[in-house]
Image 1 (cartoon, rainbow, N blue to C red):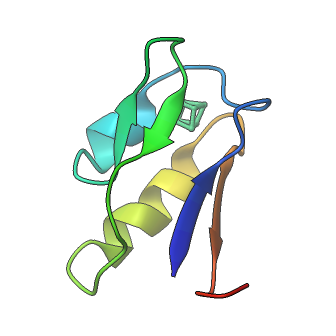
Image 2: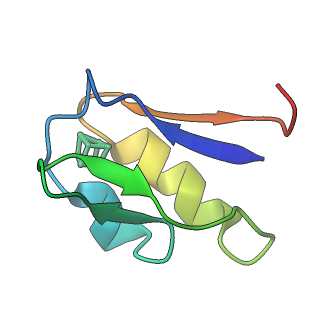
Length: 65
Ligand code: SF4
């Protein structure tokens, strides 16, 4: 699975970096960026971040999709 942040939607709440700090960090422009791979260990965090993102800016796709 691959994560993607839609920078046009991201409003910079940084909530995702709190929920899944090994998957997201804020860039210099105040947008979230993906920094890690989704693994069995952090998949639930990734799904929580997607669900909790107020801007619905986090997408997850199958590898190769
Ligand atoms: S929670 Fe959503 S809107 Fe907030 S920084 Fe993360 S991706 Fe952007």
